[in-house]
Image (cartoon, rainbow, N blue to C red):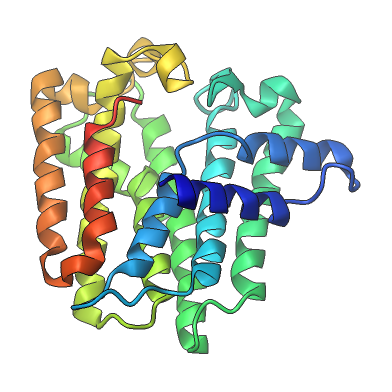
Length: 294
């Protein structure tokens, strides 16, 4: 994890516009929002999916995985910047420091999100990620769909409309498959397609794995929001409950929510059964996502 995190951090440092380039304030804010924080779960998943294969591992070119990883991390960072805005979740803390709109201002934070999303697609377009141009076009489509109204943005819209509503577990699942899960699934899908070695059946199993870990990630987030501290998580805890937002804990209770996360981990592991040794990192990441304390 440390090796991949360091590689992605260095790549993001290169790909983000330098702070001294005009417009300087915007570029400084972009770097503030992206660099030096976060677990880099989505880049880790992209790299791990690039190692997945049938039989002996045949890893994708790390230089290609680096691009895919940075693209999904730019989208993730943009979503956090926008999520913290007063018109969304109105939070002042992110990754242990003031949220982007607090450190800069709301207009700059809005432009940071816009610019990071644009940079993600620029990265996918200007670097070769597959020997097959059709596969590379598919990768652009996968990330675009994960970002849009049928993906992350749509999930956020459902979340905002659900304040004060007692959602059922299937309704929560539908919301988080889009809000949190869509980009996690895209991370795995892009990493896998950098390798050019997986058949459609294996790609489908990887997607099922990603769906399970995406939901598990959100379940654990909801549990940690009840059990952890602001200092540990680097963001304001208890805010969903204070704002009367539906969570897995409010729907199921703590014990059942923890059990659901474990069930999703087991289902994710089962989905990797045909990938043998090449899926080791994905299996370890499923463990990390469910068993993490931060």
